[in-house]
Length: 416
Image (cartoon, rainbow, N blue to C red; front, side, top):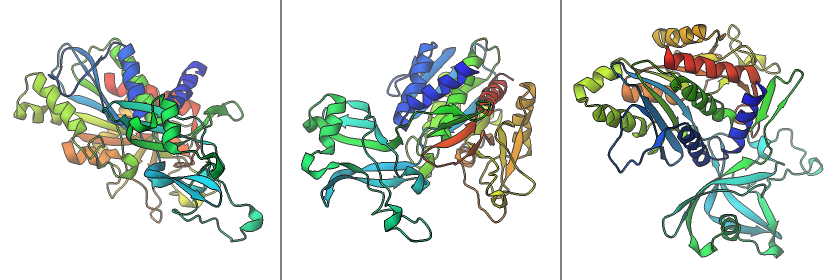
């Protein structure tokens, strides 16, 4: 257990941005024997594992020796809420050098104040080369002292109050210079970038009995890591007849509408090209989809002891009690009776306890990639996730045992 959770924390540390997460997953799969696929080349469907990266998304598929089934898909997402660096980042104010940022997704704003933040993501050089960067602790969004802020509620302006400090203006620091130093290139070589703020503090196990993990970005690296571990375990001695698919999308936190988001074509591209490489025509591919299923794995809400009234009174998923099946009558989640049975049967085979989440009628819930995948492809889909507190905070909380159970349940789904 200790080794597994240490690996989970390492994985989060090595995945400060969606681009790092995608490369991290691909590299680990390559080490396990998967071959890296170039989308511009002939598509492979030879027996064994294959993996491709598109931007901040990663797709992997394992082809069995005898394919007569469907696709078994685990979906997750690599991005997390935070702040993106704007194209013209440098500005000065009353002697301070600051960084212009744009809010990405729905972060709990106050949790990002008074934390040492690093910047991470992709940088494209003038020659078209793509590089990943992790600056280490670099910036901070400082709070206003309570002596100067007597308002009842903390309500920061999303434009004015969240711009981080970088240095004193007299230091004449430019963001391009900082990036260049991290990449060991000249500042003039930098063409463009996609960079997000990241809590610089490493994740850690804590609490009585060491039952909890505190870290950033566990929505949704908790599912990315669990699906990776499940895929690696499932393919070791796989004897089934389905193609196993890991799909970790980017941009879920902002609606998934991008060329490597769930609303884009990336998963359908993988499934279509794989079926074609296996010699299947359009009619046969549709038959394969009808035999397929998807587990949309995204973090779920644990009941909060200080805000019990925000939860449905008859559904109180709790950290430490197992993965959660997410259900919503208005199709914010894709789960239905058939797909719930599929998932919870896998949990039963793995001896994993399962909980169910339904939102309070007066508190609308969020959504996931699940309804998008089900709508785009017509594939049976269920929404699940480990229970989590402080979702969208700079630092979230999950249960150690839930993370390990999630691996077991996902592996049982793939091989069952």
